[in-house]
Structures are given as C-alpha cells and as structure tokens.
Image 1 (cartoon, helix red, strand yellow):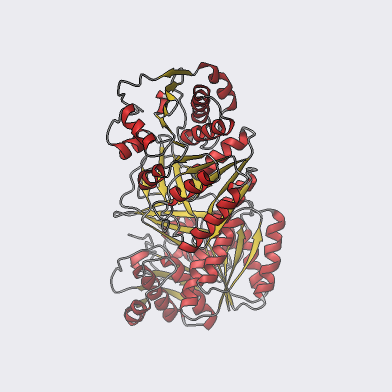
Image 2 (cartoon, chains in turn purple, cyan; image 1 turned 90 degrees about the vertical axis):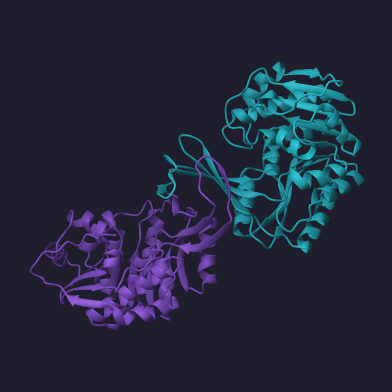
Length: 314
Length: 314
C-alpha cells in the first residue's frame, strides 16, 4: 500500500459563472465539490490506476467531514486523524476566460493533535511500502513537521517522497527523503535562481537521495545518485495543469515501490503528468492519453559536467 | 412565538481579501460563517430583541448541517425539516472597495419533502402568533408554495407576513397575507413601473391586507385598509444595507403580534431597519442606534388622492 499524507487538505469547490465581475452578484451555474489537497490528488491518481493506496492526514469540523464523505464517495481508502479546528475550503471560480482562486487560511493544529497524528502515522507506516508527503503545512505545525515524518519512514525502511515548498521543503531535505519533487520555482527558492545540475547535486549530499524537478511541458529533470536524466513529452499538452505535479508524484511513488529503473520511472511520470493535464479535473488522469503518450516519452542522460538551466519556460 | 420560514437558507461565507482580481489566486484573510437566508436574519433580529422566535424551513446535506450548527451557536431555536439535497452556500468576497457575491443554485426539493414540510409547518402554526415567509423558493417547489402556507396560516388565525419577489409574491398576494413587504423593484415587477398608491391599494382588493413598501433611506410607504402612511428616518444611515429589509420584517411581525397601531409600528420598523444598516453584519442590529433613532422617525399620513412615486432613489 502507498500511504499519502495530506496535512492541509481542503474542500475544493469549483464554481462556474458566466463572467466574474468584481463588486457584482453572480448566479453560480454549477458547483463541483472535491476532496482537495495535493496528497488526496496523489491518492486519487493511484487509486484510479488500481494501486493499493491509503490517504491519511488531518481533517476537522463540518468541512472536514465533507472532505471525508467525498473521499469515501470516490472510493478512496482513508485514515484521517480528527482535529478540532475546521478544515479549509478552496474556491475556484471558472468563467469563460480562466480560473480565479480563493484560498481559506486553514485550521490551527494543536501540539497534542500533531503528536496524535505522528503516532497514527507511525502505525500506518508498518503496512506502507512507500509514503508521499504533499503540500503546505497548516498553522500550528512546526516547520520541520515533514522532517519528522521522513525520519520515521527512514527508521522503518519506507521510501518517502516529499512534494512541498519553502521552509517545510528546506527542513524536509535535511531529513533525507528518498525523493523530492520541486518545480522550478520551489527549487529556485531553495537553491537560488536558475540552479544548475551541480547545485541540485549538492542536495544529494545533504541526505536527499533523488531530486526530480518538474518543468511544465518541458518534462522532468532527475538528479540521483545513479545518474541524471531529462524526460520530456513529445509535445506540449493543452488542458488543466493543476494536479499534474500530483500525478507525477503518484508515478514516482509507484516506481520507488517497484524499484523501477530511473529512465522507465521518469518516462512513466512524464506520461502520467501529461495525462493529468489532459483530464479536466485535478486528481484525474486521462487513461487513454496516458497509454497513447507513454511510448513516446524521450528520456536522455543528462551531461553532468555542464550546469543547465532548469527554469521552466511555462 | 413568531415563526420564521426560510425555505431556501444558505451557509453564508464572507471572505475578506486585499483586492479581488479576476483570474488570479487570493489568500483569504478571514472567513466569517453565518446561517444565511432572509428568514434566518428575521429570526436573529427578533431573538436579539428578546422576542420568542422559532426558525423553520428546509435544510439538507453537510452544508445544511453547518447552517443548523451555526443557528444553534447563535442561540436560535430551530425546527428545520431535513431534505436529501444539499443546502446552498452564498459567498461574499469583501475587498477594500465593495462586496462580490456568488450564489449557489440551491437544492432540488422533492414533492414528498415539500408535503412533509407543510405538515410540520401546520403543527408549528398551532403555537405561533405570527409567521414570516421570506426569500426565494428552492427548485422543485411550486410557485404557489407561499400561497399554500399563507392559506394554512389564515385558516388557523395566524397573521402571515410575506417578503419575496416574482412569481412566489404574485401567488402569495392572491392567497391573502396580512402583510407583504416588497421593495420598490419587487413592487414594480408586480404592478408595473412606478406604481402609485392607487395601484398599491388595488392589491388590498385581491386579498392582501397591508402593503409596506421599503424604499431604502427614504423609509417605508404603508398602504392598509385603515389608511396610508409614510415613515422616514431623520437622515440616511451609512453602513451595510443587506438585512435591513429583514429587520423591517422582524419589526412588522412583532407589531402585528402586538396589534401595535400602524404609525407606531411603522416608526419601529424604520428604526430597526436603520439599526440593521448601522450594524456591520446582515441579521444583526445596532441596539444603541435603534434606541437613539426611534424617537426621531417621522410618520405622516399619505395623501390618498394623489398617486405617488414609490421608486427608491437608493
């Protein structure tokens, strides 16, 4: 089973309106509700691919109960830990032009609740073959919360994939995850602007075992102890890029579990990301697109001598 | 006890953002949750004034449960009837300039659920001294839903106050409510543009016993079998006009219960409306403002011969 951790999930509401005009009133044409949060997207992609998965994290209040209900309705096995404060909502207002996002601040988690989660997580690790740690931390959690979870996974021999940003990423890297998956912006925040492969390789020396940088339609750059590769789709896919990174994490987690060789694993991750862009909703993948594109992903060893620009052009 | 009916309540979310910019993402600074819907505002105003009140209507799903929880937290006695479909949300995004509204479409109510509500309502009428019927109808209800509720109230000798618009108002008027409280736009939709007192008086002949037209800062125009009056505050109040009409309905319901003479009742309704504008949140009134302004409301008999323009200049 792959364990997905979502510490700051959300009730994700998508409102369709004719056109968003500030300071007027809008009739919402349709409302779509999803169990949101990056880790839940990872779980949904794995579940859709037929992989055994268990989604854990923190949920509270009526909004948390709604997330639980939606996850159950989607068939996702879950083991969330209750908190007193209310889980946040994220509202996306979609009109004919583009989406407008509203992100609630999220709950405040107490030290006791965090300790309770860590205990539960340690129990779940005993039956996990890989763990993914995705997204932001809610208020009240220490900046090294993911570092704590990574160390527990290491102690139990469970590979950990970390997909976060800022301080939680910085602390997490130092705890030695098996894989981090920053995008170009997150990597730049960690290493400074336009880091080359040599700078990325420096992260491996701090304990992190592999860095897979997602670069939008340019695909992935992987820097690992076993070598470095670039993997790219044959052409840019048009669609909804939200959730593409989560589909990538799903593929990477599956590959770590199966000890898939890096070139094959990266090709799979690029194909599943592209299939997520082709699907209209975050956390879904277009299975037909995945099968069609999978044989056409190019994976090339990276010239390790020359520093390269990993900035996304997306 | 005053019974307030809210057939299409809402979980009312107010998001504070720095500035709403379409097609960008916003961190919400603060989230305020309220049990929303015009009838719930009426109930809240009455409850704050120390009047015995009972809020009924239809609630469904997790969002309905959240409305129930918030109403209970506000100390409101409630007797809502459950429905299968989910209660709507209304989202107000407040930035430095003004509010932007997003109104979910609301639930679909089945014929059985409506019949169940009518039974429950008939039971509650036996202990009600006045009933208020406020707001829009959810999908699935017949256009004459309020007419049905008004006839049941008449049969039991319970005065009914109707505050709605469009087809439900048209049907409701024909059922003979004791009072309707249209605003200028709602009245124009019923009678044509800029109706005079003579046209309003025509409504009394169709069975309605009194018409109180709310005209924003110009106050109220009342046309009743006992005479016609205009009631106005001494000066325009600045603040949040949302909920002022509901505070007016609360005062009118209380006055009908107590058989308060019309001039006094209208002065009270104008003062309570102004106190609602002065309070920042819909469904709340500024009690100090109410006491200060109450003695200064002017009530003048209306010259019944001359048709008057009742269009609000707000």
